[in-house]
Length: 236
Image (tube, rainbow, N blue to C red; front, side, top):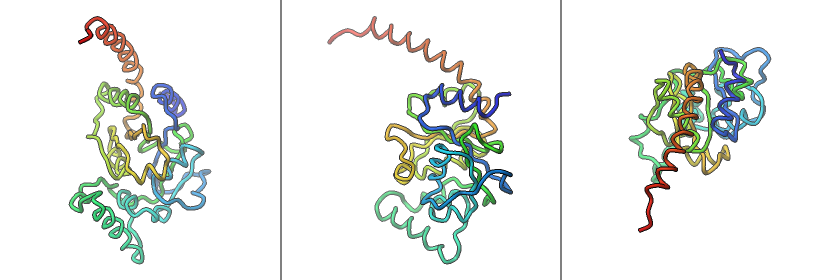
C-alpha cells in the first residue's frame, strides 16, 4: 500500500499540479500534535489554500462562521445573532441574478455538523483523509477523471457554485469536480485556467493506481491523433 507521501508525489507529477493536494478529515477530536487554526479566515475554502501552502491544522465550527454559504454546505449552524447573515448573502446573490432561491435546496451538504475538521497537505495528513482536494488545469484533471473511470470509481456531473459543495458531494466516495465560483477564486487565488476535483478518500488509492495506465494510453493516443491529423488534413 502506498503512503500518503507517495500518493501526493504521484498526483503532483502525473497531473502537473501547481498546488499541493489537500487532505480534509472530519474528526470527533483534534489529532494529537496538530495545532489549531491561527487567526481567522473569510471562507472555508481559504483553509484549502492555507493547507496547500503550509502544514496541518484543524478548525472547529466557530472558525467557519465568517462564510455563511460555506457554513451551510458544511452543516454548521450559525448562532442566533448571526442567522440572518445566510439569508442576506443569498438575497444578494439572488438580487444580482447569480442564483435562484429554488436552487438552494439542491446544494450538497455534509450529513452532520463536524466537531473538528483537519486540513493538511496530503503527504502530511495526520489522519486518513475523508476527501482530497486538487486544483489543476483541464487537460490534467481530464486524466484524473479518466483514471476514475478506469478504476470504476463514480464521478459526479460537473458542479458550479458554491465550490465548497464539492466536498460533501465526494464524501461518500467518487470524484466530484467544480468549475469554481467567484468567491472561491477571490479567496484562494486559484488560477483562472484551473478548476477543482475532489476525490473521496476511500477511492483515492484506486484512482491513483489507474493513473499510470491512463498516462500511457494518452501518450499513445496523442501520437495516433497527431499522425492522423497530419495525414488527413488538407488545405481548403
